[in-house]
Image 1 (tube, rainbow over the protein chains, first blue to last red):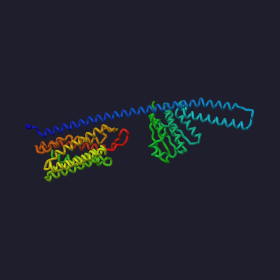
Image 2: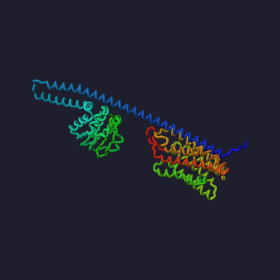
Image 3: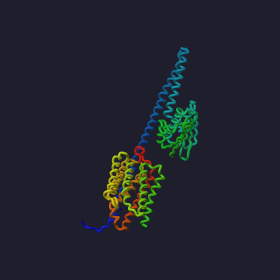
Length: 264
Length: 222
């Protein structure tokens, strides 16, 4: 074998430098690829979220349209038919004046009045016309009055953001109305509360809705796996881009603050 | 100057990852703890090595013993990362490699020679571990960037140090017999790579709090 004057030191240093360069390049290329993959994945997740939001929006919109249609049909068709029936019974005047007959007419009229009232309430709940004609606060006020009259709960409504509330678009107003309706229903059904307050206030262009009751509250463990009601609230609010914070504990009442940025 | 760098600065640089690791100790998962004990072990062995040199002893036997433990710690680290199904491969590998090192020390390179047969084998296996780790990180769906995962920094430290020094480990017995000032240059290069490894370990330890999740949002054990 031919001898060589190569220095082993120089060869080793060159080998070290070459390997280091290879390793560093390999790692840098890998970092670049991994970060590119991460960005791609994040873009996909964002697109998926957007798609889900759009789907949810479509579901809520079609639900509202269907509710409006059923409500209008109930009001226009069933309500009118019942009023006509009541009129016919009113006009029915038999010669036989037996008390049995009179009692029958009176009780039939009472039942029809009750059904007319129920149909009106159902129709109103399905599609609150006040909301589209007079706005969010009037619709909530009407609902609160109805609850106050029923004697199930004492609801106090305060509006310190009159101008800003008027600027809320109808889809967002409908969502906020449904959320408040759900909250009031929850309070009546589950909280065992005697008093509730709904306060509309504002911070620049942010509408703040503070809802509080003096009921038995919710344990934090229940909040981590919410039921249908809370899920509905969450999806409706996220759909309009509103955020919320819940403050509750067992035995300490329930409070929620909703923040919605009103688009000019 | 060179001696001061090799004898004092480099051995004391082990304190950088140790300090960061102990500050974050409660957050360290088992994989990080293996590296912490490895760094601590290396620091202690290095100190013993310099003390023995100061006393005029031959220290080559330390390298033979150290290599067994070094491979044990590195394998254990990758075993923690890869998961239990790798036990069947890595544990026999540790045992076989330890026997190989003992055999080499007793019958082959048994005088004042460095273990230039076993150490390169250790480095090559470690490079395979490190490369598989990188490949695995590409497959495992993580929702964090490369730099947020402390284990990536530690793996980079291991790869940079061991892969770069492969040729030095192979030719070590030739280098020792060469000119002193040239050998010192090689040692300076080696020690600078060692400091780089420790700094990368320290960065890894500082990132140990990052929670890893897979695409379903499940927590992953590191």
